[in-house]
Length: 417
Image (cartoon, rainbow, N blue to C red; front, side, top):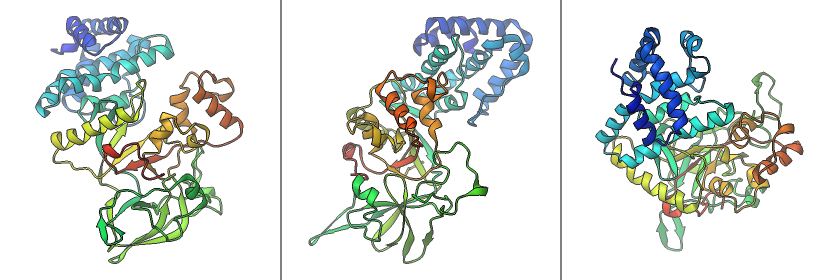
């Protein structure tokens, strides 16, 4: 079995390249030694390596990686290191693919830094070396996700049911100029202005997903709940409409703050053009943890992404940037200061309804170590703000968002104003 990562010297070299803690490399080397010496483990490892690294049959669902009970019986708490080692064995193939694509060694290194980060995260939580985010990390190994500066990106189909439109032109005196994005201040948003058919000042808008049931306030039915019961939907819940015709599009207007207004608007095709719909390709953006998030670092990363993807994947043009993150918890705008980097990032996107809940934010802000709010620490301003909000009996839920403006316009908050 000729698998590079099972050789201690090669494993140590890869560990140094990817900034693995030396103790983690030693733990992986011990598992590699057992695989080399045990016929059954070696056979299981080789089959798994062939299925994943060579044939690309990765575990792609957001669920725990299925493990072979024979591996579990032999290795116990080191079982996840067996599978991490098998995933790492794809690194030489990934690096070769980077070279074929013309992607730099720097981007390869930066992208693979998720390995040591989550390896350390596991150790911090459990007290021993292991790994759990197999449902995430395969994207790095298959050259689907790349870290470009501060942010990570991958091309993906747009799974949202909302439809985006851009005004074809704005009339300003006698001139016509291309539309960018309109703005809607928080006060105007919450009072429902610009939702009664008057779309003046708005150059990009979303029409709601007709299949997404909504609460009375226009947020998604099920938002804030851990278990949605469609059989007992309250009488005040409702569904928006969306109709397309040769004359234009008719539907309910999505507020950039993530809820749907009850008024129906009509967008004539003589004035508006569709710029995003379900199934189109989008640039799916992710925010690695740890490093500072500033307007400058985001702008630089976006510039890099706009050069990178058309060059490396010219056959896959994309329509918009998409992001679904706990940063897009709309309540954060209420209890965090406007100068917060989280709030500033959220305000760069046009949010839309989704039945999110507290779990997304909680997993990142508090983690598995603190499952109960009553015992959760108040050691940061963010944690204190979240717990104070929850203590008042108020809800928290996440939303997805999309953006269409350029890196140079990052910081202008063009949708929310």
